[in-house]
Length: 208
Image (cartoon, rainbow, N blue to C red; front, side, top):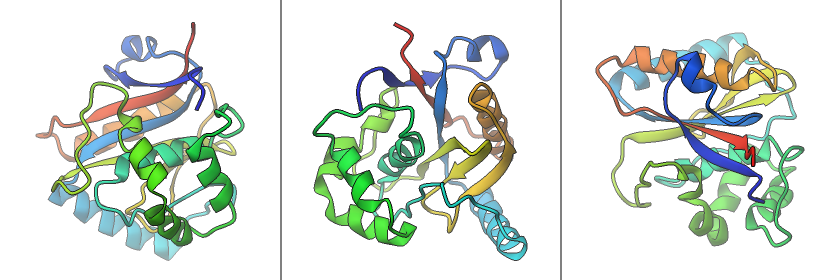
């Protein structure tokens, strides 16, 4: 990816601090603790959405996570893959090559392809954490997890490779993506009010 777009930490959720984030924002990543409360919610949500259908656009690029501790990479892929119209890539970008090769694959086929693609795993495991957050090693036991929020066709999607499908969170726009994603992040935080291990990262255009 060319440096005109950068990942950066979001330092707070009130409007004043959100206003400091460079615009436009094309994706938001949330790093959060996987707790018993979250796992129980995830199971309930999955059953509910399976029962009522989840209305996901075929334009959404989604990849399953089958590699341990690769959620940073998966989050990065989800953020970039669903914003290729906005982003510019270097000519020899391993990520662009991966996206082109997997464009027509299913989420499961993409996961299998990623397992064999060392260039992506090695190059990008820490790229989603260009803020101040330290990346865990691939084999470290970890209970923190990255997910991505993107705007596809005017809908806010939560993309989590541990889930069977994307989750739709309602309407959004290019101008309100950060605020809309933050509202969903607040729900994650409210679910585990004793937890402080939450980090929000925005992929935004460098204003310089």
